[in-house]
Figure 1 (cartoon, one colour):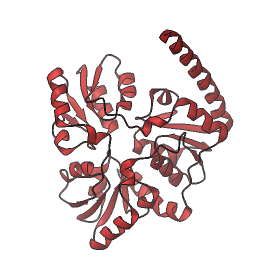
Figure 2 (cartoon, helix red, strand yellow):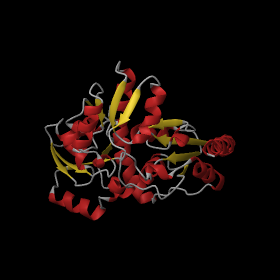
Figure 3 (spheres, one colour):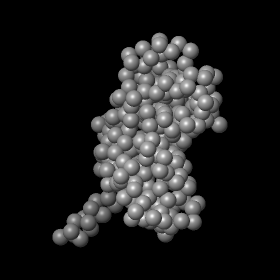
Figure 4 (tube, one colour):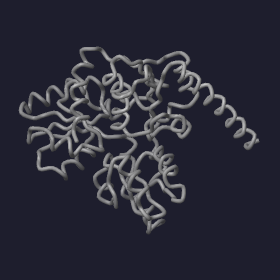
Length: 312
């Protein structure tokens, strides 16, 4: 029975992929998928990437329609950078708890308390927060962005764990908002020690959105893309991975001869996983749900995103 169900599922996915290719051509659409998406979504994407790469692709594409397979703030960023494009998201319920942990009123109060500070906002945030921001960043370029800002005092929003990591790499004073990623924050020191005991020869690669005490245990610390590159180039054959489990698709694709042990089974973002192949096809059939950002918000937010893209 199980084998029959798997066979039926494979046939359905094949039909969905064929339908998707036809729709893409009809709509002049491009599919962008974050590394945390389900395998079936990453398989059909035109580009897979982290937030930074996908923001670049959204800004550069000639396609008329962008289907953003990620969470809502990512679709907003794409719409802000490509205002004349139609931006779709397979499931509009794909939110981000960390992005919801910061609000405009609170940020404005903090800005009033620190009038000389510049606001650096992690891209994992809403369009409204980006509109209150001097410059955005991703985990891939956060330190470079901080160093590029013409101020020694920085309001850092919203991820306290990434903010703590960045603070170790700059002499500037960071005023850190108390937000965090629910998924990365799940990983504990106990989890890592248990995995290191099981696989003593496997390096621990970790994302800086994890807790500071977990990041300190990392043999390599970096953004999703940096982790992928490190594992790909390394001569080591197995790794303990401290980031969202969707990265396993690209890790295995890059290095089929290597083994990747995720540091805990809880490294799964439920919001990223609400998108699937069936919803992806449906959103191109119906051209819904579309991402909308009010022009007044988009115009302000675009400045902070474009400044981020200009940092070398």
